[in-house]
Length: 118
Image 1 (cartoon, rainbow, N blue to C red):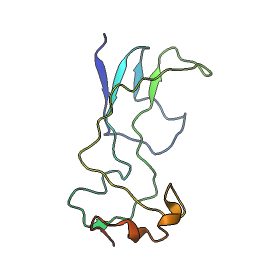
Image 2: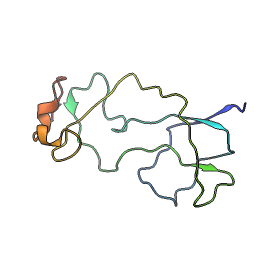
Image 3: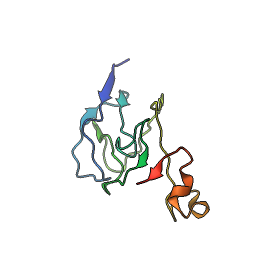
Image 4: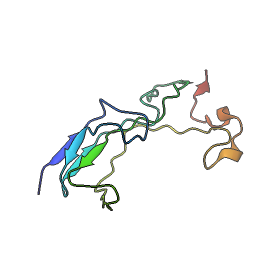
């Protein structure tokens, strides 16, 4: 069994774009541990007390990873062996978006945790 390769979250990008150069190249059968930033790119912490207005850069993405020998049109199998959540999480309600879009037209309604819109 090959060692697990690590791909840290020090460098991220914010677009699905095939022009972005791979940060890691692997062979078939290798395992990669992705260390990912949260969707808010670290804007919140357990002691946060206000809603932070996000920069519209998007969700931080770790990668990409290239598979040696893979060609356009190939079917790849990716097995997720383990998913370890962080110690802190954030959720949002955005008007007209997401699963509960119609239930929370005012984003501040979803702030039962004590955060306030600032």
